[in-house]
Image (cartoon, rainbow, N blue to C red):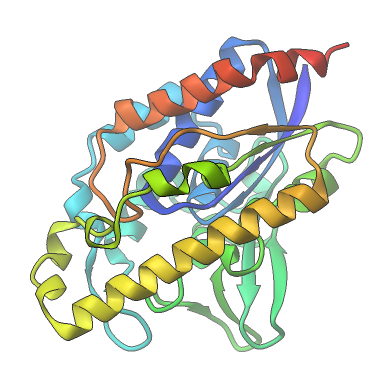
Length: 275
């Protein structure tokens, strides 16, 4: 069955999207269009470029995750050079016209205060915009705009996915757990485990950074639930990522398996789409 997919943001937890893609393919669902925000934008772009889920899991599993984070300068605590190099393994010089299926990446323009669905130009630049968590990673700046993480306004880009393929049902993948599971999320001092941040964590600036990250997380969870209620995708898949911190080092296969499990739990709703 053909579907359009909306992949939500959530930091390193987005590895679970790879398991979702893997299981959807195994169950016979064909993703004909994909929209993504933040970590979901990474998965969306790489998948649209033609990488199979197993290939993505295997390749990302070889990445030294500690190299993804480095102290930045200017407008963010962290630089994005490590992330840029990692993404280059998958996307190189791909443009949106090179992609194998329609794809859009959600970002927010700080000047106009509006959501933009990026669908033109270099895919890598668009990915760096959709993952630019304010104060964490630097914004993508042009003469016309200052672009940051789409999760500021559009955590799970359901309407964008719907616009890419209006005739298809939208399956949304949210990395925000149900409200009753928020108590299971890692506490603030567990959110940041990336080695490059450990020395910073003992300083006042480091504590302020942790509070900023936690605040973003809280806002994202509330916003995701609220917008899903309004935009009503045909199916919502929710991997159980409560024990993974936003900037944590993860076991890639184990995190992907959470996506596999979530698809299995959503199978009755997914199969009902065929009726």
